[in-house]
Length: 238
Image (tube, rainbow, N blue to C red):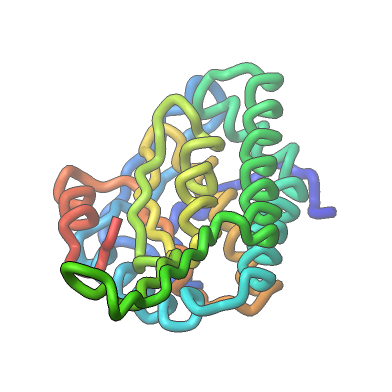
């Protein structure tokens, strides 16, 4: 288990395994507790994260289901290892009660473990094969095969009302990673510290399992141009 002392954010972005500072900062506005300074996201950081995600796709997108499941389970483990710190900063930033944050953390790790077991089962692949019918009239039918394949880097936006279950490592991130798609998250400025500590958990899981560091990036804050740059980036597929 990790140290259960208070988590103090460093306020940097996580870009392909590196904690990166920005040129400007914003100050968080927690419901209670201390405020912290965070680097402001930029379109240049978005481009850097998306390029890293594309590079990661050519290994992570073709990784085995066992590798991806191990990664998802490792993220869940690392989140649970930071349970008390996540609850503390989450309640400070959002004003939500501890019981709500604890329940939402359980939902978050549950989603990660659910997708891990789902892809190991293999039923989601829905493989189909319709053999060729060269003598069919009025036209022959070619050999048809249907398979499920990852499409590439995915953008995820943190939700204001769900700092865990639909944010940095929430259901959108979990499903994309399960499918073999690297993820670039734009954190929500209402709970940047919660986003940062969860990103630390994902970073630890990347280190533990050896997946490409570009598989996940977190860009904090930023103005409308950051979100626009992310959704319009040519390397983002969903």
